[in-house]
Image 1 (cartoon, rainbow, N blue to C red):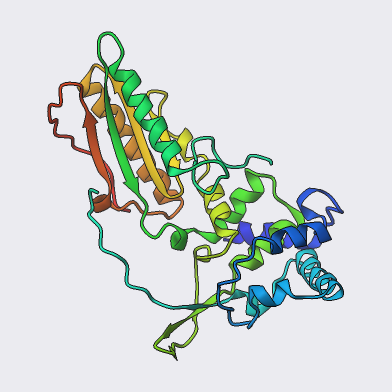
Image 2: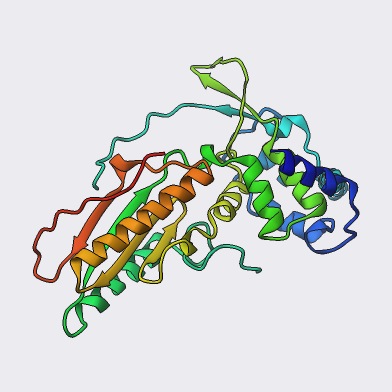
Length: 298
């Protein structure tokens, strides 16, 4: 925590100039961002909604751009932009078994031109390739679920990783730090509002920036396993697998990988959910093999 604070203090007191991510936003960038606004969404606590911004005149849009660039330059957001109202919706029950590239190549979530289908095809093709080997190879896999992934992001660890791994500095990192801190939520249930609750950790749900920050927080997890293992990611869903002939060795490799993932989760304060994570075996002759795993729930 102390190192993260020192990094942000250095970002606020240093001058990186008009370079890279630290430069001001242009009018063209503002208009492009506004073209993606969802006009059907209700306003937040600040009372501003998409249609209102869309109907701003030219001079008002320039004024809005000035406000955004001032926020970006000094690394602070208006308090109203960090308050959220949550309307609870019952979740559908489901079966437990049922530019510059910053993200990992194995991460298919939140990336333009990538979808769940792409990751599934890649995984299935790997299984098929193993079965087509002579002699036939088999595949062991573990499909992992992270519990409340966005809510468990450790803010200070994220800021340190952005600084050390991705070389994000200056007002950009200062702004991200302010974006993450001093956030609060209220629950609206039948038009009755709860008292505000300050959020200690996590990235805000529903923000366009949060998926990118989460992907950067998780980046590198695919490199912690041995060369025998392959890793696929889609947002916070992870699959790890290996192929071969020796079932005992494959099970050992899979469990070693699961132990590494558990250690990584512990370091980054993430938590795997064993009840929603499964280990499975793809065998050409459809025989059932019982697998024991080393996945810990943190």
